[in-house]
Image 1 (cartoon, rainbow, N blue to C red):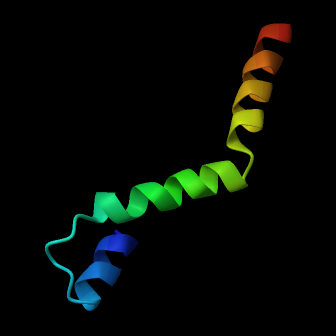
Image 2: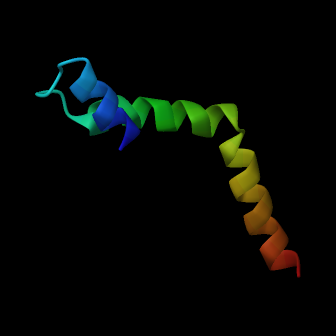
Image 3: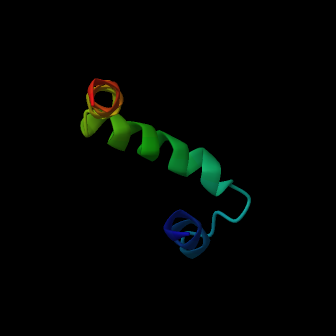
Length: 48
């Protein structure tokens, strides 16, 4: 929603918000150490 609003304000109506949002989501996942968090919680669920 935020990406779509920014694109509209910049006048880029033909650019899909998904094409802009996906790289940011992937970058956030990598910067937040997503694989370690995901696999760590998955392994912890099997230990209990």
